Image (cartoon, rainbow, N blue to C red):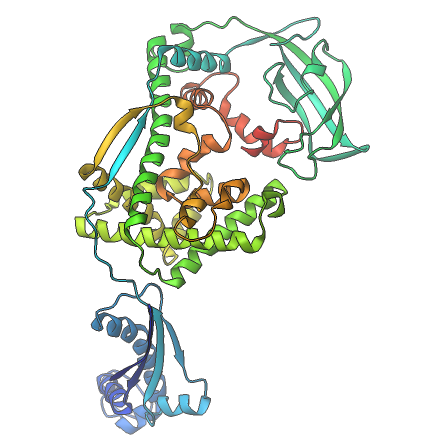
Amino acid sequence: MQVTETLAEGLKREIKITVPADDLKARMNERLADAKDKVRINGFRPGKVPMSHLKKLYGKSIMAEIVNETLQEKPQAVIAERGERAAGQPKIDMTEDEGEANKVLNGELDFEFTVSYEILPKFELQPTDGLKVERPVVDISDEEVEEQVKAVAENAREYETKKGKAADGDRVTIDYVGKIDGEAFEGGADTDSQLVLGSNRFIPGFEEQLVGVKADDEKQVKVTFPEDYPAAHLAGKEAVFDVTVKEVASAGELEINDALAEKLGLESADRLRELVREQIVGQYNQFTRQKVKRQILDQLDEQYAFEAPQSLVEAEFENIWRQVQADLERSGKTFEDEDTTEEEARGEYRKLAERRVRLGLVLSEIGEKAGVQVSDEEMQRALYDQMRQYPGQEQEILKFFRETPGAQASLRAPIFEEKVVDHLLEGIDVKDVTVSKEELMADDDDEVAAATKKSDEKPAAKKKAAPKKAAAKSEDDAASEEAEKPAAKKASAKKAAPKKAAAKADADGDEKPAPKKKAPAKKAAPKKAEDSAE
């Protein structure tokens, strides 16, 4: 076999591999000889079939098998022998001339093919003991915990049917149909919908108009959808809702005691407070982790400036761009609304893709040198987490990750990355800094700006809220997805935590938060924009 390098430009490589016809024929003859004693052919005794006859019957098909095996085995073997690592799947080109292909299968012509690929760049790892991180920490007060406990209790509050008019704090059960210009619109109707007046769950002006209604009343509620409403076809539109009131109920006493805790499946009110505190700490820790990891990545980005394989960059860019376009489509906005153009946005997000690929290679090298491993148990947990996200489709998800090439690697990569970050934190200077919860949950500098700061371009991406939001999901891939959920809803920590606590503890309560989070997808129209965006 002969290997000839035909291109060596930057990270791009192209090699021509030639397998002599005599080598192919020798392998074919070995297989024919091995098959001679096994095949059964009419007119011949076992083991007495002439080689020429075997070759006539099976030679071409065996040669095809050998050619395919060569294409599968040789490229990676040759690349390894050259001391290189391919950045992705090598591209293989063969002759398209049918006559030449037949000559190869007949053993009359050398088998030649070219292999095109990019190599992973070689770079020297820099010392990491000079990295410094400020870890933001929030002191959680008893008052904050108590406020969250009250919110949990509010979810478990009981209501009793009352006669008379509805007041703020009462719960009304209603049917409604929303119309714009006299026409009902999709998502604007519901039956037996329960709404606590004053909870601000529906769009501004809706709940106020129901104060004073009684059971069996019919009322028209006139509202205007906010200009920034997520459903673009409703944003800024005037609507009329035909509402039928089916029940008015008053709220029972809000008591925080052991009886409440028992109703939630807990042994005491003190245990409820402990659980709520744990939930708050857990949420704050997600934001802390995100900010700490971002500091590490920014410092590593300053240390390394090697060329990234364009095939990997292009794949990462396409992933980001799909998220950007999906986010703009959901919001009903355009690049002009974000004070940019598609061309400018593409340029900035391509730089972001290059940063992510480069940092991924650095973290991979650091992890390999440190012996970081992802255990089977960790992979099983990650797979289970994926399956839990798709109730009723567990078998399909399991089949996908077992049979799809690269799928398991997508589970392993974020786990490996987080373990590398943990490894780095063990050896670098980490200083705890007490901050307010507002400071902790504030957005960092725009990640697109961070990716472009090395260039001469101005980091105008700070103004581009929608694209930023879409791309943010994969900057710190493993940690950020959960950490960003509260931020995306623009909710404070003290509102998000009790929902989690209640969801975990509320086994018997009348109003469970989890179903409420699903409701906007079915009846989004009259609800507030932030609820609909959940």
